[in-house]
Image 1: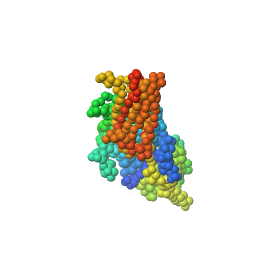
Image 2: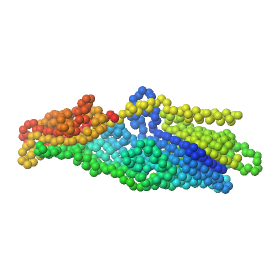
Image 3: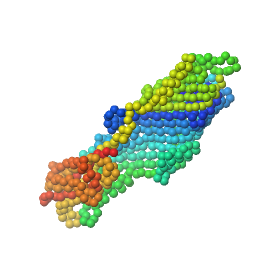
Image 4: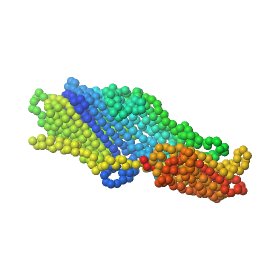
Length: 447
Length: 182
């Protein structure tokens, strides 16, 4: 909702090459941007917890049947700790700051969930695929500096360098393995159970120390995570890049990518790996000739030994790198309704449009590819101090995403608030997604 | 004045929407009633016997009774102890020996006390026409506690008639269908 809003400094975070119309900004620490976004495809809270007298287990079963392994849950939170910027020369603008981000993303592990919820009885001859297990989660602090440069009246370019300080990370992607139960009419028993090519890995950093000494309480863990907020143990680097190109006075195109970057996890790392293959028809007694005082063959122990030899789990501490979820934006904007400018020959200000109509395609790279969203918006400057934006969008979560943004300026003090999926806000239980952004800051303009 | 009105109107809409938003028509306390109810079909044991298994390896003398005991460790696991509600055992014998064989399957506790038994006679058969017996044994209600108390499965096979010929095979298949509630 803040993309291309030229009088909010946060638009520089989404597109460092965006057109801006302020000369200096300074955010209220910890309050200049608070952003929370939650989304789920395929299921809402209402689908399971609807107060309609139906059995909840039937509803869970219906959801499990309708949901797919490509449905997902995503949570993103950003808290801007510090932001500031100022104009450099006639064409440049320097900006920098610190923000903390939490990002979690998980595909629905359909097959393992069905196996746990329903068992294998109705799924004889079918695969339970462990590649359905795919999730990532991270908490980090981002230090950034960016530069926005207006090359000429048409082209503005910008870039941002980011330093990542990892607080916590977990990822389990590219897993393989299939469990299946087959009828074996010509075999040794009714069924044969097999687990083939299992290879499930979970990488963590910042978790092992929380789990030491029998584990911490939630409060202790939260304190420990907070203590790592500014200088976490694992670092990384990334860049953002963006542009805005004015094709005519009224029409411009723009685009950006964010977080082309990687975090190297080398400290407090713990990896868990489960791998191997095994198949069994059941235990096979051998009817040995035993004296009365002799023990029977320990078939179960032998079975467990075979299982342990073929299906293994290991815990180790291998460094790993984590690619941040790359985001992209691409859009165009059309302006109408020229603003009246002050009749002062000493003030050199380009004319602005009161109405801006735009369209934006955006995406985020996730383990199985990009998630996409398309948004069309109308941006209206009512006066120098109040601006709003109405948007309609469609994405993986919903086809009816109505958003609204309002920005108010009192002298140089600015308050903004943006909410997306307003229909969802009327009853969050039925919403597939909801997001909210708000902030307080000082924005200084030439006029 | 008009702008001011619109400004207030839009601000009110946003604030009313956001601050009146809540979860409606849902009952999250229902979460307590969510149950995992998996039905697991599991192979238990299988064997294929022939005349050698009914012959003493040292003396070569015919042995009319053979037996073995298999520990089913998973019956002691917490998910069985806490969640097993129903068990259905299927036992199938195919006999090509020319004599009937008595089969006893006894589920024993840790102290080797019998909890329940499944006994039957496997009919005589031949290579072209094997004697087949296929049984289902269901344990539910109060009886499921007998399964939860069990840990060993004892098998005894007894040749019930004096054999004219010892040639033949005896195949056994078994599986359990376990219903859990967690």
